[in-house]
Image 1: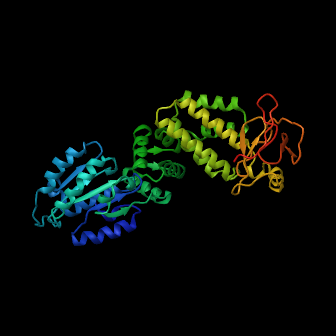
Image 2: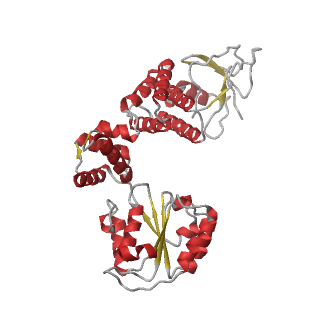
Image 3: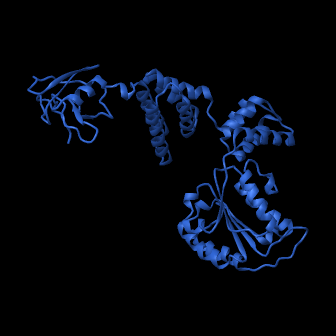
Length: 409
């Protein structure tokens, strides 16, 4: 972990501003936010070490993270008591040692609303003798009164190039051998999180020694092998439900986490060039719904099977702008159909399905033909004929099936 702010990787703007601040030794309250593993905690600790040095660090800095109880009682007692004590400003060992203390609240976005509200008054009352450093992943979870009192610093995710150079530096210092394929794999599976990359590297080094391959990194990272993910996606593209069900059962039997499978399937779908934007949107929406259900404790097998079947359905359908083109044109020209806004809503015979210009009914729906009345027209579709006419009249064949399409007002 870097001991100085200037050594923090790939956060040039943050480092520049903080370096200028350290020269004056007059720090404001600070709020560090951004994805995990980008250097937020490292930066906060580096500032504290550069200001106070190793001797005064323990007496001048209070660290509280997610493992500590940080409810309203802790704010009113531990934090308030530490913040209230005044300190001197004597330089020791070449460190600035300014006349204030620092309270570092790591993962501050997990604090309760009551605790955050209680901090407002504490920050105002003891601002001359105490500085607060808030660290969080989601700035939206910090209440506005706290955020407005702090200087905000956004930490960007690390690019694969920066990750690669940093990992090579670590490997050189630790005596590890990492080939180009393994380096690329580690940078990719870490997703901009340097802490995660270091953790994977440590685990692989303990299990496989100093020479680490891409396969070793995948085995310790929990990432599902690419051939397993591709097998499910290929089954979905084939339109064969039995094959998709077989691949889903294989994933569950191997114990792969379904949430990780959804994440990797998402990458494949988004990067695919031969899938339309509309299909991608439908599939990704299903991914989001399944992920929410998994968080709520739903069955993994059923959720993955649901995703597979929905993906299969989305990939097998024609693009919606090609469905019912001729029918929509005929409907728009028919004076008996009333237009509401920019969409004509109609019910497809015998199915209770609402169809309109934005969401046409699927071809192949069973249609019921009745005798055509005055003002009615007949249109061909890929799966049969549909009938529509003037206004909102309906036909019933005695089985609850509508014999025509009509306006839905």
